[in-house]
Image 1 (cartoon, rainbow, N blue to C red):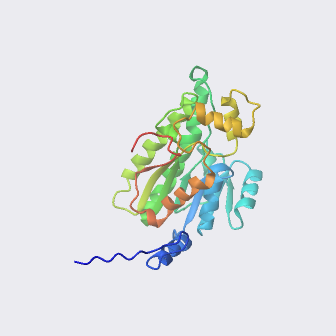
Image 2 (cartoon, helix red, strand yellow):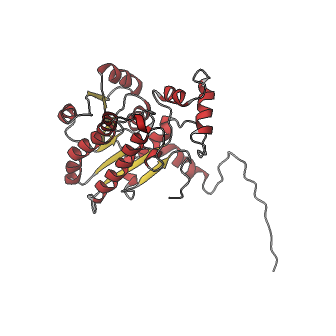
Image 3 (cartoon, rainbow, N blue to C red):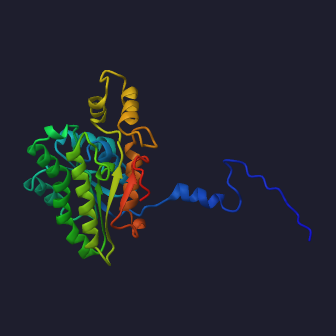
Length: 288
């Protein structure tokens, strides 16, 4: 039997005849099918929340953002673009949620992003600190989910997404009360997902790692041996000493989180429910 070998040369960067054009089409024309969806995002005036709002607007969703002050909301809308609705509300209390329910009684996508953190030795964390972080990080999402989930189930479509943290499964010793709230979000998200069985509603959690956001540099400086060092040096020391398991070894950018959230918000993610998606730069060493 005669075997003839014909060499084929493929130039890098040049699509092959068999499938290059199809791949290029996928890269250029990915459609998350969000044009007819309304999304509500909390803590959306800066950082991850702002990046999520920008990404969902890019995908054609109608976006409602929630913040504590009108000035911050107006600044965020200026960055995101026209057509975004802003609601001033303090979601850390039950009455504080009422303006949101009045302005946006129904939404298709709820992103529970509001959250605060602070480094503090465990023995110095007072009861008030535990309750403040719990009300802000946990109960804000509980109240909104409790309001919007029934409508999603009735319409048989919806997305609830909690923005948690890698701290949910690897509690940081410098802020145990924060880690507790992030673990609580995982439990709530999974429990709510169980109530959606057999429907087109999903509830999931995203776990970012340390992400560039408003206030992150001051946080890193509180952890630094030399608070007067450059931003780059402070960041490098933080990952070297406090997050050495990170494979990324840098702060994650907000859009790197937002693109994952946009996928979860999409009808294309229908088979992902009750999940905790890791976007933490390989910081967690577990395989699941």
